[in-house]
Image (cartoon, rainbow, N blue to C red; front, side, top):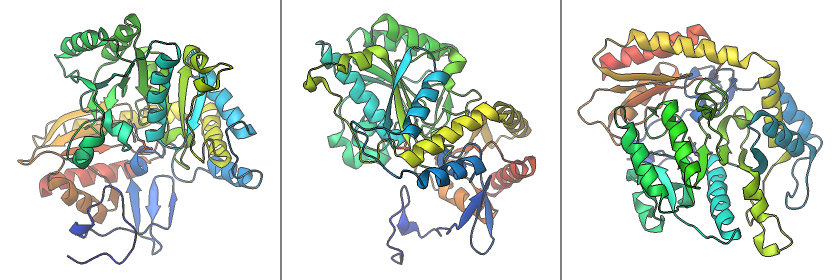
Length: 418
Ligand SMILES: *Cc1c(COP(=O)(O)O)cnc(C)c1O
């Protein structure tokens, strides 16, 4: 095992396995390019962030323009136009009860903020609560707090001693939905602070899909018991599930919503946590002790906000929904061609996301299958990154029919090769 020559320590990468790490010099639409012209189709949207495609001209122009006006500004007690425009637009496109926007810089921090808002609310109204309810197999990020509310496993074993206790509700597997709802109802009677959930689909947990009516029921159980309902739309937001937000499909209005990933179209890091007025009101006071004490240096960075405002303008002016519907149909067609293949189990789709489980003896996250598949696809010009034995395709909405065809042919070839 040779020690890598680059000093870069990559995320979720076992350097000891010695897999090559392609050096990308530029990207356009659904394609990544190396300096020598080698290209790859980005079939996972650079880890679920790129929505319209790489280097969308309007987003790139917004970044250029803003960078010549204001690069960065302290956001505690100061403000700027890109943040104001973006916040107003976010409030306009989300349901009326969501009235406040708190900025941060990643999906994980937007979830940390959501948890702090929930506990801050109960604390400030003088009825402190601290328990958090979570859904089994969830993923909400890699910071200590978000690992605490996520699935425990090999990827966070070393840090277990630092994680706080939560109450876990079973995932609503088909036929078991009522058990989930009953468990949630029972847990809500213990007066927890909040229930956090990935709406309609658990991403990193293995693209596990559950029906909209279950989401709606979970929401009303929380409302009945006065438990705050947090929707983590970090992955599901911005069209992935077929609608702008996954909650839209269930008619669900959460108390708190986390958005990141596609917020800037995937161009720059930015996140927001939206909340209902009573949560803001519980912190609104002449008493400085009731202040929401949370900030990071780059909160609401003006360039990132300008990129996000451009993303919202694209949603307003371009046929984004039509592109999503077309991609969703194409994904369905490709998936149905594999429906008779015994090696591809549980073919499933939600909006633009298609997934299946590959039948192997050593399934699970540490299966040797995933790294072998990653190499197989990389050698065929496709960027795919299975979750254990779960393979999924989540491309930018601009992917062409030819490119999508190449992705699925690589998948078909891999089923025979593994
Ligand atoms: C990716 C993801 C996060 C974490 O976002 P980061 O920007 O990687 O910190 C949180 N929740 C969900 C559902 C995600 O998919």
